[in-house]
Image (cartoon, rainbow, N blue to C red; front, side):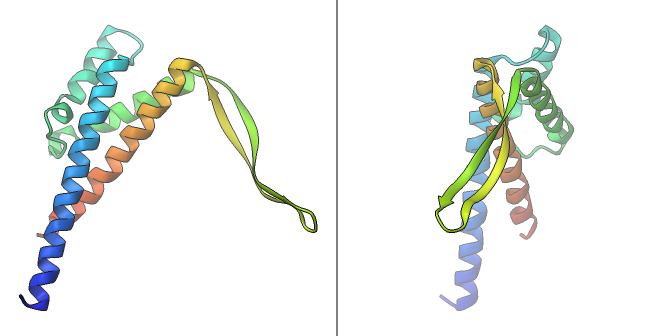
Length: 142
């Protein structure tokens, strides 16, 4: 096989891997959303479920879903904020006897139990959205 043929095969493999990862993350996010039933009321819960129905079916690339997926992300972020109890400052680093403390102080949210689950779902959904963008970019090259 020619050098160019190897590059093309590698590129197609990269697209396949990106698509597979996106489909898997989309299905996981949809399953978690159905399990957690996030939402402030039954109308919002129903809308969120409809927004991720395509993900559950393994179809994360519908252009019609773009606005719906961003709505889901925004709702999950809002729900996480509502479940936040406080923000705590945490030092990330180490103590050097000669130089003192080396690191940084971060503010991290402290959530209710439900908030922790919603935060994990939000992180999973964000990972899905990033994976979707990467896969779409790779697919557009062919």
